[in-house]
Length: 149
Image (cartoon, rainbow, N blue to C red; front, side):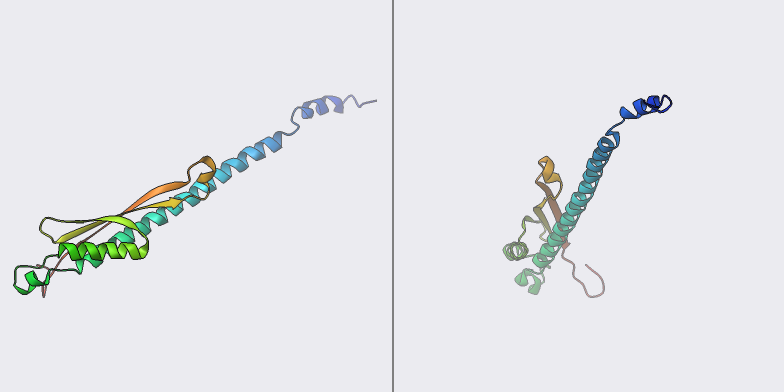
């Protein structure tokens, strides 16, 4: 014969069977989602930083391609457009990156934009396989003995 004191308590507890398992499953999924966003967000940030660094270095490499004839004749220090673009694209090619190279009208500032993608680790589960990244870098030609002119 069931104990009359514990029978109502048992009936109350029987309605909670499996409640902890459902709660645990929901919390685990939420935590995995947060961890996944943190990992993929950090990965995209690192990929963007790399794209910025590659763009800066490509602009710096292009800035080394000055027009020697104009410099020797005293016409000013300007970039040789073809050589500068070739140097920037060569640097981008060596790093396995793709981008564009721009030159200002006075041929004293180079701008490089790099496009790339970050392959996600956790977001691919929900159908987001890649995140696009872009980096920007520029170099301005400066010359002078005691200060930039």
